[in-house]
Length: 353
Ligand SMILES: [Zn+2]
Image (cartoon, rainbow, N blue to C red; front, side):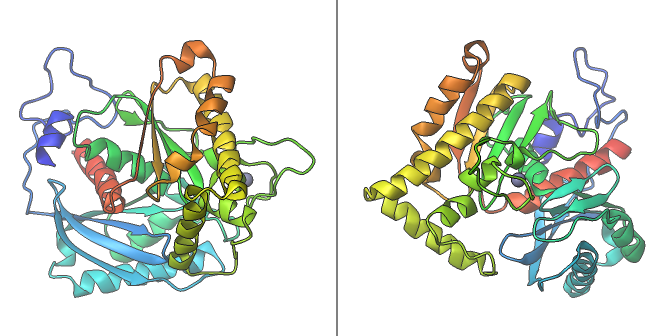
């Protein structure tokens, strides 16, 4: 990754006074030399399978060591965070590294994370709170800690670890058990006032029988277009189930039914595509993202949401904006979690030198 860091201007061989070079947020002002093995960062994340993963990465963004442990079910954000902290301590203790080598820890969490202030405000399935998660972990482990939402981590991973050149601005739309989005604008993540944006709760149905959403509202796009929304509609969603692997396997079976021509199941995927298209059209109209990367957790889902998705886009997006927007769909690589958190930690380290 060090070549990427150089190319993207985080690490400079000379003071960054080349003509035309951006001096925006997060760019270093002085000579930096990568001492890749002198210090390390920990990129951690809570996965949808209910595990807490911690990956040790050197300052050039290279994988050194990784471990993951299952997380118990919790009633509050605070008790969840206490367990995550104790898992982190165990993983650090079991690792071949000394704690004093750790320059920073970055943690990606699902939900509404105020990264700038280090607060977790909401994790779906848990009551809302304002937990100062970064400060709590930082105090206990005596290492700088940054947290962010996993959607932001996904966008960072996509930007920093891309195989080819990335456009400076793009919107990343992710469809998994929830629906979410993150934006990059001019080579930096778009920062909203509190760092929170909830694309999944954009409303796409205002009818009296609009579906209820886990946020407490009705008619949210995630209730129609997420894997859990689709499973609920086909009567295969069990909100009490904690076995996400099993739910994922059930979803694959439902996808197979649609692929094999079951018309009722096809219609459910078309409805999901329609709602996603309406929500995205409104985002495009309002934000002009230029490029949209549509990531689905499972292979083949994007094809099933077509063609209703594109029809809804064409009906609802303003032509002058739509014709300037490019789209691509893909499945994110398995290692995006640590890469996204690592990119956040490295950004923090290099922008503070
Ligand atoms: Zn909602």
